[in-house]
Length: 182
Image (cartoon, rainbow, N blue to C red):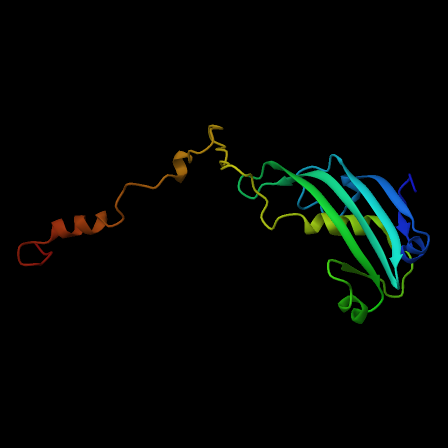
């Protein structure tokens, strides 16, 4: 078992050795997730087991964390717990990927032995982020004018003035025969 998490791994070599990787990765180490996170405080607990089942090199394991995502309604942080099982089949072609046993996702290795370890974990985290993160309960948009949620500022309220009131003034100028001449 590896206690210190590596930056790069050779999945096929680890599968041949029946390796096990356990530890924590800081959320700040994931570059592709920054646009979704309101902050990158916290860690991801990672438990991965590499092995072989016949000719299939595989990675199985589990990741868990709590992400602080940006709510798309109010832009405030919303806690999103992630607890996900990982089942990857290590393949080197699309034909092999299409023939994976049910329940396995492909980890495609083409012309590379070492891959960034963070990428495996980050891919799984990205798959667990909802399309539109939002609070479970109704959240309200904070009002910047008086810091009270819900109410719209006075400048944004609908005007009660009739836009056709000018036409009414023109109608008053008309005489009884429809002429505006005096």
